[in-house]
Amino acid sequence: MSKNHKMEIQCPKCHRRSSFTIWDSVNVSLNPELKEKIIDQSLFNFNCPSCRTDALVQYPLIYHDMDRKLWFSNGTIEGKSASENDLANILMDSLRRKDYTILNYQTYDHLCKLINDYE
Ligand SMILES: [Zn+2]
Image (cartoon, rainbow, N blue to C red):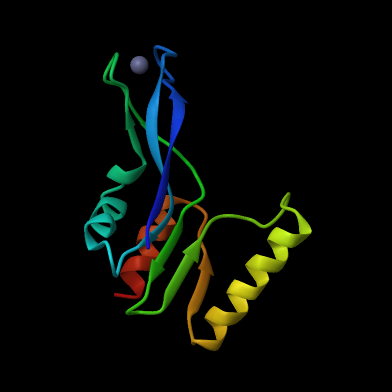
């Protein structure tokens, strides 16, 4: 299941705030159309409705591919509560048992490279 939420983003040019969709996790097996948007990076592109400026928004996104057993994330578990860490560890353990490839990426270019490498 893919998950998203809306967030207010401030335009770097005109400083007006507008709504932007943040994807917390993307399951590309269920939503292959989102994979395309990750590869062309349109999923991260903020287009200001006031001045039409484009800006790339960096946010933590989990890339999940059930068919290829891939789990890519750029989030850190730092700053989270112990119970959240426990939950994350339990999830990681269950993925490892299913022979998942679990990797961290730093940038969206890096994520695209990983997606290509595991095609
Ligand atoms: Zn603007």
